[in-house]
Length: 193
Image (cartoon, rainbow, N blue to C red; front, side, top):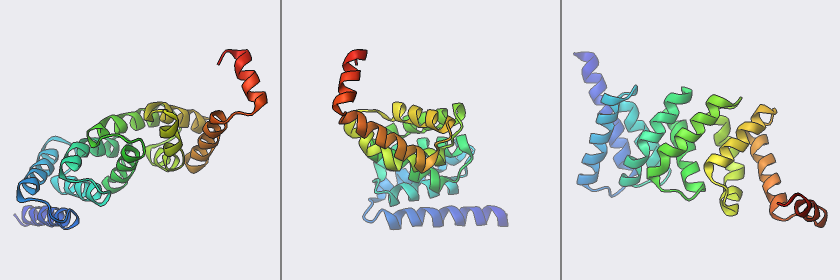
């Protein structure tokens, strides 16, 4: 009984923290957030308290109630895929969603892409998050989506260029391709690119 009471208190505190960060959230939206955290606690490997932590981190990233509800599933997926804490997963996923100009409901897609890259290459979601800080704005500006960017980062990781080094390397490659020298233009023409 004492354990259950402590868990309930911990969940209530977590949701109070969500309310504090989401200043001005309506009672209706707060009830939806609470219901979402409880549902995730009942249907995933995470507790409702941990789901509340994920909601708080999304709110800290500037997501409103609807966006946080839409993104929470992706955050939980990313955290479970690489066994990382929810705060880190929320930061990485929300940053990637924002950097690529995506909607919060696409957080699950972003999480899936990063998890797949992590599973099939010698990198992990944390390193991908670090790399994306450097390359995501350039990728977005050049029309390279999150999947192709993640794939390129995974291939760079396989070659030993992980995290910030991989992100900086890919950023520089994309910038050079965006403004090729005359010699590069000639080679592109010769190759039919």
